[in-house]
Length: 301
Image 1 (cartoon, helix red, strand yellow):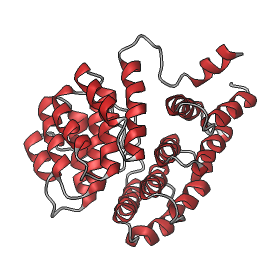
Image 2 (cartoon, helix red, strand yellow):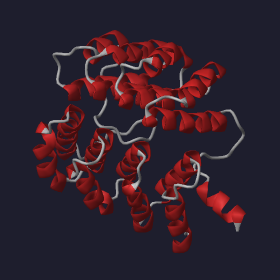
Image 3 (cartoon, rainbow, N blue to C red):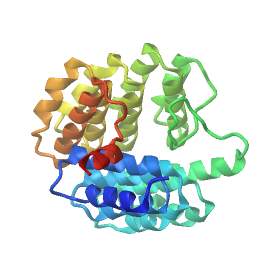
Image 4 (cartoon, one colour):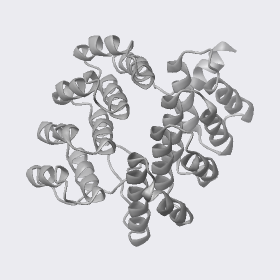
């Protein structure tokens, strides 16, 4: 058991704007790993921060933790139209990840939100919770141990899955299921099929493709991720996810691109590159774990 005081100190570190963003991210993921009401409270405190990226990642972590204690904070963020779209989107996705039927009414209300990324996210979250209600004995576990916005399809044929992934006539939920099936299959063919999704119409969909490619950490998709990051016309939410994916892949060929776009005009892109460079350094090092906020806290003492 970690003392309550240490969890609270990590929460203060998370919201300390005088610290490097990379250090605050490590505190965030340490809180996620610790779990419990104090960790949820510490992470929720980040929703007042000026960094959309930090707030987005805070919502993501709360969703992955699956603790219903986080629901009131996430609902408040989803309903707050002053919050950035990428933050509201992640709050909606987090409610879907937690999977409480009690969130359905609110999520259905925001399925018609004027911000398309928020509306699409809530549609997916509703479909996921409905799927969970019908599949209580068949959880959507996966080798990456993440809680995903949709369960994978059972199909194993890469060609068929790619066709479903890129089919704009299919419901987004079904295309997401194809996406996660390809991710779980792995291998270069699946990676390249997913990378083709970076040219699809929905920014939310492209952003999730970037996230999935970052999970897979396969260098075959570096050119496509780099092209999306380098495109000033691309949605910043997509560019941010592609930057973090490049940091996760952690090849030398990613380094110059991330350094160049750490000076981008878009704050969320700049900050994503800063965090990605720290992630790249971690992946190439012999550090035991990325979420090292607790060990650093104790070292300072």
